[in-house]
Image 1 (cartoon, rainbow over the protein chains, first blue to last red):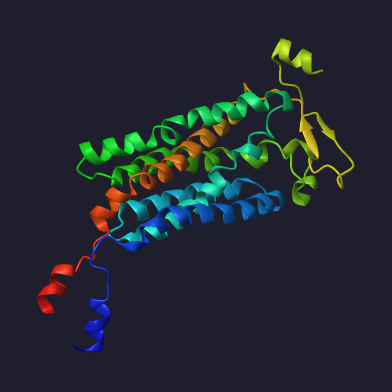
Image 2 (image 1 turned 90 degrees about the horizontal axis):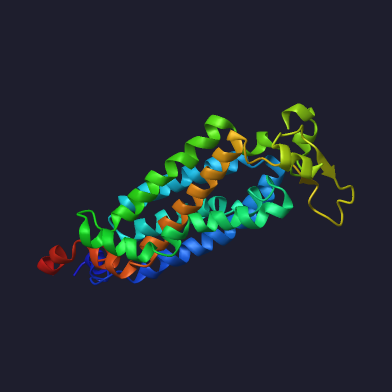
Length: 180
Length: 86
């Protein structure tokens, strides 16, 4: 047997052993992304980080929805994990926009809003797998559909950073108060 | 000032409290403004809520059905060709 055949013959023929990395790499990239998004968006402003995070989530979900191998799914979760570091940073972005006494209710509602997927996600995923032809790919299709508004909203309304500059941003401190 | 804003519902000009001692406190401005009737805030809030929902959905739903996904695409796709060659 030629060596090139040997290389192919050593490929796993059963289910991929890398499947656990799909979940692991999301956590890994989320933790790395948190350290970057928090400090860098303090310096450069929040808006483009959140536009980039939402766009990256759409790209990651497209890669995941069209994945034909487990390795492609791992790559998709790299993008989704990095994007989640921006999308799940609502704790300090929304908290900066409301008075301190209201932060409890405002942040609680965000978690309440995410209950359909954070709590019932496994059940919904099983329903997709059982009842649809595309099975688990609908998990990503649904996330793409939901990501469209957060992706388009900051671009059209220039939301976070122009709404109120509440961060220690040297650029924004130079602007007149009417633009903050 | 804050009570009057709540009673009247009128959004006053931006009034922020500037904390000077930045070496001990990392929050420079604390808003007292009630932004809940501002369309920009409502849109921002909805965008953040949907972003969090999407982020949870894109991870929790596939991650909890990894065994089924692995049964679908995890197999080596050329396994039948390989067995016929060898």
